[in-house]
Length: 120
Image (tube, rainbow, N blue to C red; front, side, top):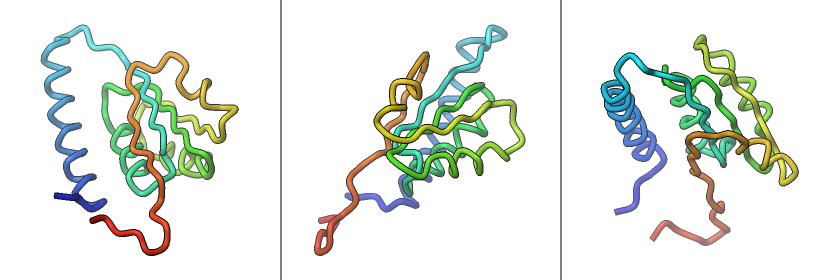
């Protein structure tokens, strides 16, 4: 079955909650911050993914990357009142900087459907 964007975001949120509990339990009092990079952060799945990562208390640094439009997404996500620092990167020249020192890389990026294409 093919999931729509809403279904994918719902599953992503459930996994985030479960992983936060599991990681917190495994680390006990030794929690540390993680740098998370989201590649494809300006897309329909990447934006809510970035928002969910910003809300995760284990994330202290959030790197948002896409080929275009990422600085605006990063500005929006940065307004969420958490301790995670957000930085946006755009274009091929900034990919390396976006990935530098990342503990977790999430890639919701894809190729937009062309006219006439379906999800079948």
